[in-house]
Amino acid sequence: MYKLLATALLLGFWLIPNNIVAQTPTQAQPRALHLVQKIYIGDIGTSEEAVRFRLLLEDELFQKGFTVVAQPENADAILSGALSVSTVGFYGGVSDINVTARLISNSGERLWSVNLPKPVTFKSAFRVTGLKIKEPVEYRAEELARNLRADWEKSTKASGLKVKR
Image 1 (cartoon, rainbow, N blue to C red):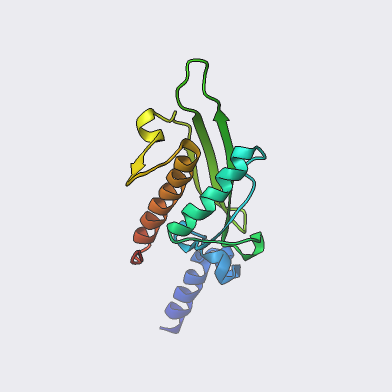
Image 2: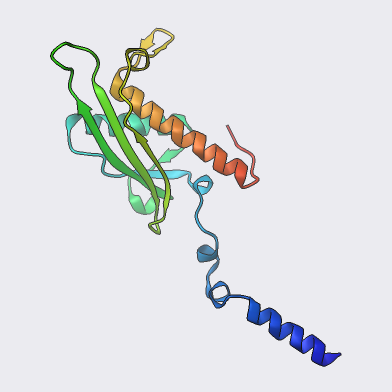
C-alpha cells in the first residue's frame, strides 16, 4: 500500500512542470486587462494635436472610470501610441484622424491594442450630444476610451467578476 502511495506521489510531482513550482504568485497569474485601474499615458506624439489628444484622452479615461496617474511607476499599465491628423483637403471636408494605441503592463506584456484608422465621416465627426458638437480629435479620444472600457468590461465578465459602473 505504501509503495502505491509513494509511486502516486512521485508521479504527481513528476507531472507538475518545474516552472510552476518555481514561480512567484505575481508571475503565476498573467496580468489581464480587467486588473488595470491606474493608467499612465505615455508618448502619443509631439504635434500640437497629439498633445491636445493626450489631454482629452485623460479626461475621457477618467469619465470611463479609470485613474490617470502622473508617473509610470504608479500605474498598472502604460497607454502609448501614435496620432496622425491629415488636414482638410483643397475641396474642404473634415480632417482624417488616425489613432493607434497599445496598453502595456509594467512587466512589458501587451494587454490591449486598438487601431482607429477609419476616416471620420461627417456624421461621426460632428456627433451631437445634447447641444455640444464634438470635433474629430475629441471624438477619437472618446472613441479610444470607450473601446478600452468596453474591452475592460468584457475581460472583467470573462474572469467571473461583476462589472462596477
